[in-house]
Image 1 (cartoon, rainbow, N blue to C red):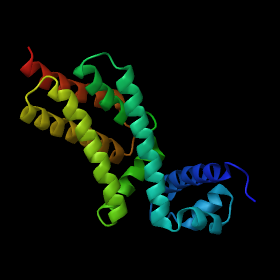
Image 2 (image 1 turned 120 degrees about the vertical axis):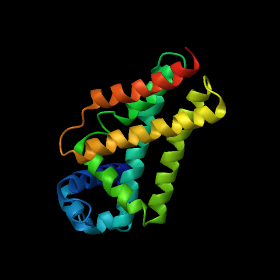
Image 3 (image 1 turned 180 degrees about the horizontal axis):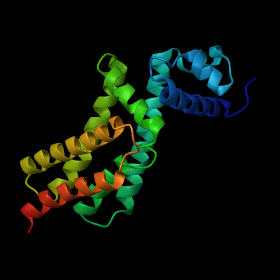
Image 4 (image 1 turned 90 degrees about the vertical axis):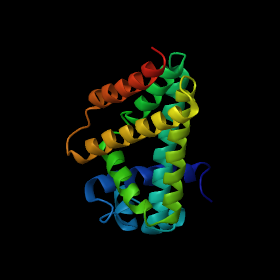
Amino acid sequence: MPKLGMREIRRAQLIDATLLTIDEAGLAGTTLATVAQRASISTGIVSHYFGDKDGLLEATMRHVLRELWQATSKRRRAARSGPRGRLRAVVAANFDAVQVSAPVMKTWLAFWSESMHKPALRRLQYVNTRRLFSNLCVDFAAVLPRAAARRAATGLAALIDGLWLRGALSGEPLDTKAALRLANDYIDLMLDAHNP
């Protein structure tokens, strides 16, 4: 009989091993066997918990998305009151140290690529995209008319993704200070244009 809580421990261990394996070998080089070897357990256990490689990537991305959601929620609660502070909190969460670590960045890139071909991953990407847009819209709408708020949210989401993607593909650590400065400048431009 398995120990109480062992399932959660094993899943976390395997997700960590997946992130590190994708970081080193890419998605193509990541198999149930390579993840099992890194975690020092049998391939059968990996298969038992996740089914196949797609299930493993989906679970790993659910973990990464949960961390992003938690960082966003925590930063929004701690933000200075008002839409500007909450918008900056959303930006900061997207450039959180966890989200810009090499293993997570490479896993995001693999996920985005695979989400174009796998319905389960496409759904996760859709939920993530909608959540970001919704958070941004709510805060922009506190200052801007609805249509302008939607345009501003679309622009900021594109800026976040673009800065993140350029950083991920640069081959060097992401300059989060520069990314935050650019995104926060955009927030200021949008809000100040309607509320001088």
